[in-house]
Image (cartoon, rainbow, N blue to C red; front, side, top):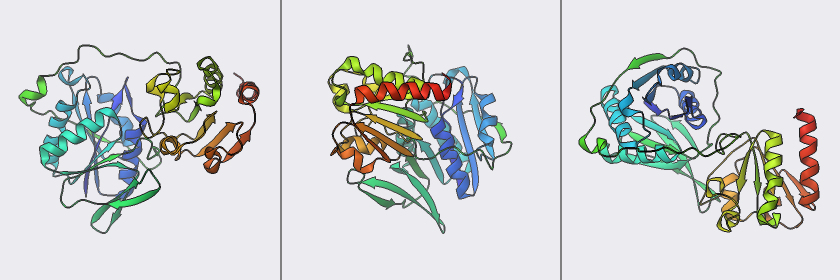
Length: 321
């Protein structure tokens, strides 16, 4: 099996999701290659070796600095042909989804998306995908190669245990005419003092149980004490209480932190879909019958306006913040 993993990077860092997929691919065995495309990215290639990549192909050029999908489709299509790769894997993100779809169309290849696992069964690969609003998991496969797979955000944790030094190979690809039509005129970055939602080990999320948008400061302070990120439910963002970029759920982001603290969240199935893979779920709600308690590791019944400030202070004391 010859596998290529698309290594997405932002702000001079390889993304946690891509490294997780790389670690998973390494556990399956075979010939494993990472691909980096951008400007000033060569030094990032060494990191990939720690997570299992035997070699990393690097296209380091100012012409492909902007995170646009089509030049990356050109790059991956070239490598698939040159390397004879039979599998291409992507971690879930907006850019990766665009690249995966474009590559599938270019190569007339099968793409399975929203996968949460992948295993080798003999000579075949079998993916696992949630269905029926995440109430069941189904096995999915491919009828031909190359096989393309896009994994759900947070599906795998990076593991740097068994890796070594990756061989770095420079390469370039011929850009199609239509790949140079689009240009990025500006790239805005959200002001944030904490980790990105998809990368955070701790997430504190707030729901309508907070009562009013001003009370979201309770969630923000607790997240800051943990060194984590802030999340929100769809009802909250639809009401204009918090930005859509922080929405967690079926129509928002899917996360899998080590600790998920739900504050004033009832736990509708749409929200559960986005956070149920968290390692530990702690819920704070005054309603003892809140659905979220059914899948929480720790349920705290009480007034969040009294509990959360005390919890924040305790966390600060423990962490010396």
